[in-house]
Amino acid sequence: MCFLPVISICTGSTPVVSSFVSLRAARAAYGGSAAGRRADTLMPLRESEAIVLQSYPLGEGDRLVSFLSRNMGRVRGVAAGARRPKSRFGSTLERLSHVRIWFFERETRELVRINQCELIESFLSAHGDYDSSVAFALFSEITDAVLPDREPSDAAFRLLLLAAQQVKRSARVALPLAYFSLWTVRLAGWLPDLGRCAHCGRALTPDEPGYVLLGLAGLVCSKCRLPGTRVLSGAARIAARRMLAGRLDALMAETWPDASLRELSHIFLDLIEHHIERKLTSRAMLEPAL
Image (tube, rainbow, N blue to C red; front, side, top):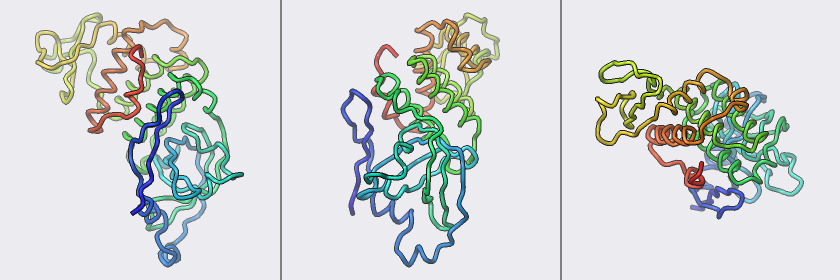
């Protein structure tokens, strides 16, 4: 069996082999044998607004693409000839490209056949900044890991696009990453109550720290603290409430304590990793200061 290495590349860093794609398995999911393809029923051409999450080399000139469709959810498909010279896809399949995409489905196939992409907004220029590139890698990896196949989520689509746009426009990463991590946890239904102790029920004062234990559905006070809990400072709790009440583009104009943003990012990234039951590959490339 032939295996293709999947490479995660971040500007200024060494390529990391994160996983392997089986060429035979990918081709089987896409179309199998010629007889199998003839037996399938080709569905009508679909059109959707989408964001490219991941794009992997497949075969000699194709690409295996994971994208977030606004009206269909997370979808995977094959873009035939996308890696060949003068491909009609151009740069539309780069990570986080905001596109309009046309594709065909087959009744018995997991992968769709991507026919055409039209670029709405590119984030390619922002990949030249290391911190921005790492944030983009985290946004796409988290979205790809958290969202189930073929379940539309307009809120997740808007969150991903908004976070990527703010990083691109400001070259600032700390607030968009904390905001994206927090809202991903909330949309997934994993966010604990940040204002009340889950054990004794006491309301926490605004600047009082709380304590988080991965796997425990809630925040606890200092009296109910258990071994192994992580502290969530009062300042970080206040920052989280501000993020939950406002849009990221408006919040970017406000002043935020760096320590609170780092605290929120790390705790909510830990929660995401706990629920998806694996480490985020791109998280290892975060600078210690972020």
